[in-house]
Amino acid sequence: MEPVTDQAFAAALYSDGDAGLDTGASLLAADPTADAELFRRGEEFVRRAWERGWQPSDVVRLVRRELDETAACLAAGLIASETARYERLPPRWRSQLDGLPAAPPRNRPDRFSYASAVLGLYRLLLRLPAIEPVGPPPGAPAHGLRLPPAHDEPRMLTRIRALLAKAEATGFPEEAEALTTKAQELMARHSIDEALLAARTHSKEAPGACRIGVDAPYETAKAILLDAVAAANRCRAVWNSDLGFSTVVGFEADLDAVELLYTSLLVQGTVAMTKAEAGQRAGGRKRTKTFRQSFLMAYAQRLGSRLAADTARVTAAAEAETEGGAGSAGYGAPHLLPVLAARDMAVTDTAERMFPETTTTRVRGATDLDGWTHGTAAADRARMGGNGPELRGGRGNR
Image 1 (tube, rainbow, N blue to C red):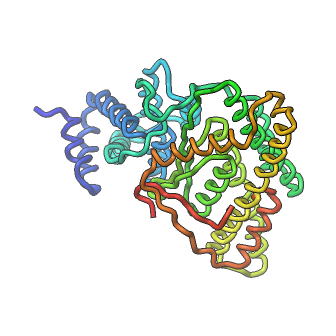
Image 2 (cartoon, one colour):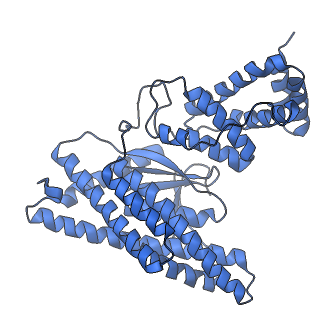
């Protein structure tokens, strides 16, 4: 006789609709001996996701987006169990695992409801498409895209993280402006120091990549903001609108900076938008959605130009040091601009190998003048700021 798990999967996973899920859940709920095999099959589906290029945070993000928080927690439990078998994990995986939600108790609130939720999750995992890998799966040797080994966070990034946390927490725009500006300056200088040190020591480090979630609502504006942050920090971002993330390509220190700064600027922008919107509502205005969209579009575009200007200023100052013979941070490294140009070319080549079919789309849709004005002002206060809003999208994007 066919095992209960196979019967449940045949009913629920390979057909659409709730009827199949109900049939499969009923079969599983009636047979407690199937529990262990059900969980083992889930680990297998997770392992297949790694082979298709997915990473832990990618899976949980998509499950949360397509299903709900309960399913995301179920996925987290499978991921934690599956990855526990590996002695070593790829770079960035440990931090992703540490950020997973807690797994719910099994068979709660009842066996049928639990089985139904599990089968819904498995149906989604089974249909995950292959995506561009940003590193090897666990248990496999690195190949193709070269990534540095996992490492503790450099002291400079810890300092930058602290500055951005203060900028997010303060209620004074001028203080947030000063803190965020200082953080971007440290990021730009840190990137330059890393580039010069790599040139001096003839480092074989190659660009890597990471994925950063770009969640609804107003995901187009958020993707523009991430693209601006990436470009200012010598990286390239490619947005996959269908799956809700951007892949950022760059050298390791720059990838860390992009993730830190984007997250902080998004927090600061959301706070500023909420405050501005409250003022609009107090005046009797009700067009909330168009105001928010235009606010964030303006915020992202304005920050793009300011970020680029800040990076150019720090780069010019560092180049003057190398021209004077001092070298950045006392390294006595080669002249800066050729070193940075070589790294920019390496990033571009890596991005084009990963995404040979990208498209560039000019974005429209900011129709609210008040929202645009307030968003521009908020970007000025954040002191972050190149060009008009254009996005690079990977396969499946529009």
